[in-house]
Length: 199
Image (cartoon, rainbow, N blue to C red; front, side):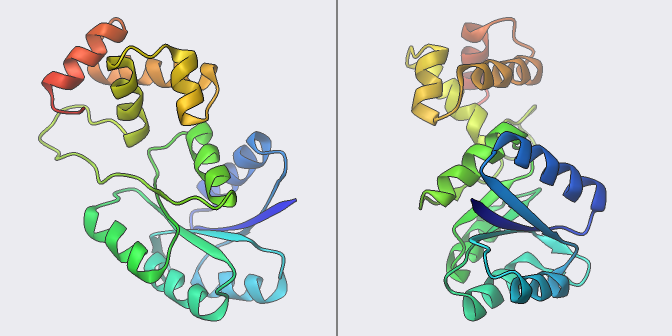
């Protein structure tokens, strides 16, 4: 059984994500903590935690400081940041602090579960910094990757295999992409994304 700690001070989001991820990843146990200090209380008590994911902004601290302290006290635990706005500066600070991930809150549950699975398998996941706000209808790095692969002629099944997600998850991403880009089909979406400089 894999075990992680999720630290977030918004109870509805925290508890909802806990349930969704445990439903998506059946071999995953998730402890939750409401903030910086409660996270360390739980880490001291539950010594089975393999990975810690913390929100960037906490009521009693911040995610970067938490990463630094976890790395100091529990170097065997992998730790990452969940962030609404993963800027280049934040990503660089996470890397310097020893974090293994900086994940965008724009990820849906399937994409977040995929990232967590990658981390448990020893990988690193750093979402790209968002595009400038002047570009309309920005897309997450995962959806831009889907557009790039489609632009190279890959079918949904091949895209899923390349990104290690299911074909149905790829189709779900396409629905979001079509809505964001106001596109009627894959070809139109790829063309618009290229015109906007998204890929």
